[in-house]
Image (cartoon, rainbow, N blue to C red):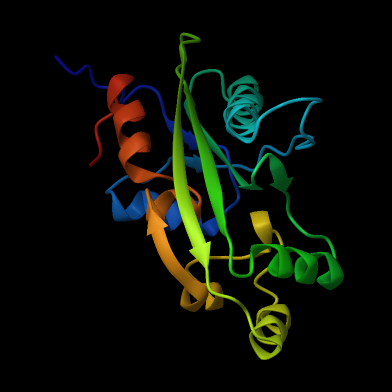
Length: 197
């Protein structure tokens, strides 16, 4: 039996327009959207998968503290080549270094999703996707850098943008790479009694 959570407003603890668009695609429309910025630095010895889950949970906890009566949804995406985490580049030079690292190689994209109910229950899920890029030419690297899509993007790229044409293969969740794995997200919300409209 699914219990209606109509008394608990759904809060998306993210300012990402892509996450909002993905939720709308699944028929989910948050009552509030609020960025919950935290220190996203990995802890010593932390694996990429654990980092994604921890960061999503921490964002959800910040959101829950601000909206104690809400059902808070948060996510975090981490890109990794082996155990090396690729964060969000702050400069074009950093983005170019990431493009060169990803060029012709496979990498993994981990997106952690966390939901906290008004009664304090916390549930998390992890999406893991393997992505392989073609070998990038200098011209392609220049185009990716000039696009500016690397700003604020884990790994320095957005698969729904120009970088999508560089992907040879993807095994896993496309929406997870965009930033919010819908299968896992809808399942978590349903587990908390939330029904999409």
